[in-house]
Length: 253
Picture 1 (spheres, rainbow, N blue to C red):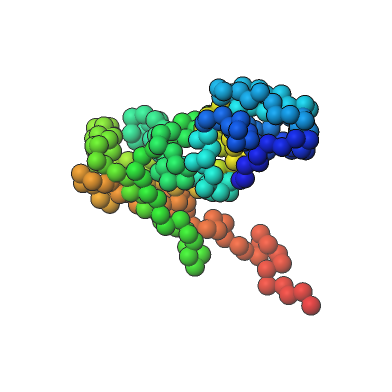
Picture 2: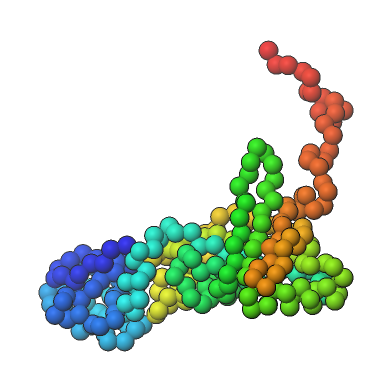
């Protein structure tokens, strides 16, 4: 995304990012067009605080932090990858949902908000989602255990079901694009990368934990399986017979 330097009698479209001229530059701030129009003959009085409306002939802007400069290297189409881990009351004693992100997609040091839910930055890596030769993927989930958090969760779960180790917990991979994420992720509650849309997701990938593969002081690794695998279901579930499908064995000339 590019930044436009203010000029007189210029036509500006919605969501254009404008920087004041050099002599009127406001330290730390940029201005986003919220009402499209044409700029005036002289530069407006730029706000010196964030989230303030600035009027410029028929154009209106809102001020936001120059942290935008840190976001410029991010492609608006950059994939934001989020993860949830949901426990099962019958297996784990609670239906707690843990929400994580790896922090590698948005220069985010803390939380990412998506559809109003907070995803905390945590060292986590999920791999092996690609389908190969028609086989259902069995991804691996590796989570940092440096803080002892995962071991503590496992300990509590195993008090409910001995040796469970989170088997049966639901793991969901959520992917969207940076330009769609909640505006609250950015200074001034403005997403400078695009227009937020909390329905804009790739199809969610849902798995369950099949087993714990590794646990040590550094990491805990789980193997995941598709819900069909865990249920022991073979596809197709119904046998295709002539009684059900009379056209079986019939060739159309």
